[in-house]
Length: 129
Image (cartoon, rainbow, N blue to C red; front, top):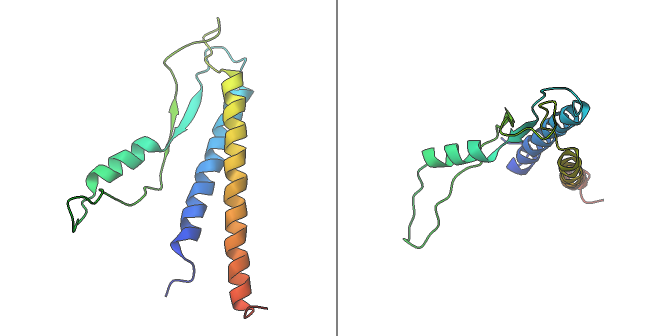
């Protein structure tokens, strides 16, 4: 018997991704003046595409779209393609701050949704009171 729906598991995975992204962004910002530091990024889409290629689906109609499950892992990669500063550093502080703000909004939305799911469970356990 499954106690929680898959939604809670997916929210947990999304929160884990968001927390990792926040740590990577904070590390990039902390190293904005470090000579030869190369910024890092968290990539999820490549892993997702790789996993979707492995899946086969059964279509009952030729007009149906292909589908697959969502992969839960991601990777931290170094952005070594450019240097913005004279010291070899490639951290763009404006980009990092923008990414941090976007990630914070996403994290807050995920926490809000998770809280809502647990409130619903609490209501069910109490019998609707």
